[in-house]
Length: 200
Image (cartoon, rainbow, N blue to C red):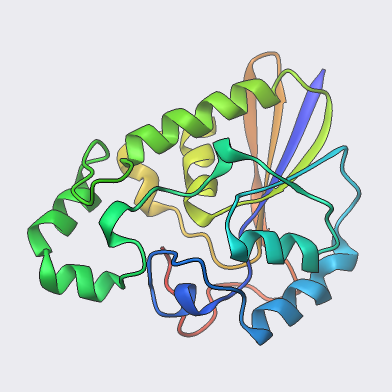
């Protein structure tokens, strides 16, 4: 039995453009339009899921997916840093930010560590491996990173070395307890990170 999972990162919104830890804001007009233009390129899936954030829900809708929210695929819980920009946090708490970026077990913001995110998402991936067919999920960029780390058996420290531009589709196939990674593509016919977009 082969399981196929496609993870799609959300389209552009102000938080992504400003390198701001998700604050619940919606897609911007350009991001929504780009997601709608990419909808025709998606094949039907047996299961459609979404991270429970506004930008992921709106991206899924723009792509024409009737997706249900999956709590296990929520983005990284950022605690008291939520809604702040990376620059603001770096200016106010440079040592805490440096520790968080260097140590997967650190959570100086009072939220979730990268290690805990990888464990949570890894548990979901194990459950997904028990299902045949194809799953498409619109998820936060850090969820794509966490799944990639798990599938490749990479150290958690590699988490920040994985770039996930808006509307990137990463494919994963699982069979007999082993997962493989399909090279990521950017939906909508463009590649790379749009100007002004963070690689967070």
